[in-house]
Image (cartoon, helix red, strand yellow):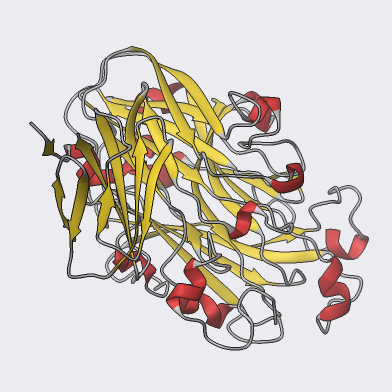
Length: 473
């Protein structure tokens, strides 16, 4: 007897981000909200220089006694005060705003939380536990043109539990890190007013929450698993570095972690982005990503938006990504893993109840090539659970249960996809992420060479959305 089924996790997680996320970024209204501005147009400098090595003119741009701990020209940190944390409500929106100075290229930036021993005035980022909570890509910006500021909005109610965690705060201070690696060298000659300057971007970070603060909690369990390394420090995830793969030649990486106590509800929050701008580089190739928890395939996704056109307005410096003319959705989907001027999604894998002990999280990207041993996939992962109740923010970004577009019929020798939306391709994988079959511009895929057992059917539509179905043959 042959049947098709979709588990709850498959329905919740086996899709690319919902279409609503593809709209142009809108700055959230602060009317009737509690607004906590953590960083206010702080200036970042040449990432390849040191704070000691930057010019006197650049040093004069750094305010005295602003409370910011500057680890590097590209990594700042500030301690969140008890007064600020006491104002956090159950709902939390994070707004990041990047202002143009003298870097006119697309760069990667991120916001982190660092858990630092209570009362410490400084810390080494490599010696404390940290989690990444938001990642973004700057647009190609010329500071002389408007808009000269780009916003990135992250809906992250689940972070409220961390910020209100009384057990965590009893032994640790929570520091908010702002990381943005910029380089001024091209802008020094290409952008008017940037000659000999070392300032690259301004950064503003704002938390927007309920007007009524929420009480402290003592049921949150947070386990940092891994946080991305900047490109100038080391490799993250690829197929050619021993520290970045489980097996040389294969793009597959496993991270193990310890859950200290049983939890009634849990999730894994993770961020990945694909980089490598060399010829045929992984930055320009959309690949299927397979996510496993304790060796069970739980999620598949293919990075990239339907279109990058909503972010064209922020790219005021001419560049080879956007070009001079608007491009079709199909053109964007042929090469873009992310859009300059857009955020990278926080993907959420819901787990439900989890027992204490050792667990494993694995990502496989079997089609990745890394031509010339170039490119890297920065990865950040953290586990979050509660010892009672459920995690707040179930409607968080990428955690919705979409209505599937297709109906699937599995027969002895074929699978048929019925959908009102045009199908671009159908792919069939086994649970180890090995590609078994592919069919282009057809709603029927042959199963004649497919093995018996659990398989993953990936349906990619003409508008770029991908849906995935777990089937039993």
